[in-house]
Length: 167
Image 1: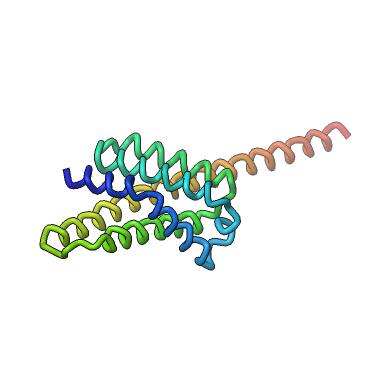
Image 2 (image 1 turned 45 degrees about the vertical axis):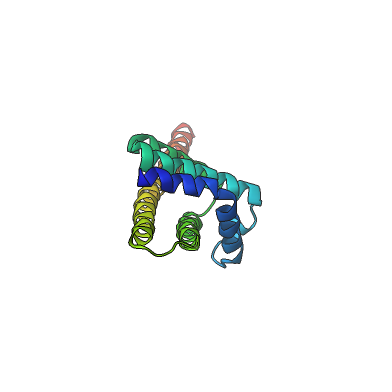
């Protein structure tokens, strides 16, 4: 129930959270490629992340969430977004969501403090999960790229040998 409320708060305030994330990303000197992306692209990434968080936290469908995270990361890899930038973007997303929740003017009762701690706990778990599947997608792409290069190298070598044999 608490998790469902947490996801609802994030969804209901996603515009304000997205603006804070975009501002932070534009200020971060380590996001050279992401700096050049339109705000609408970053917002769409955020919507994808929020939906993935809902699937992970509320539905507890970790297989579906893993597939979504993997597909999201594979697309970013194909778009040549550096892995380091994507992981830093995840950090910024988590930081801004937590900051937003903390800034909501809770009275700091024990329940409010508990909600804040649970928020951080759930977001940390989700972003660790998403980071793993992101790195897995990039690593799979790297291995595929290496295999293609090796096959190309082997076929070039075979053609050269055939050319020497017929000469």
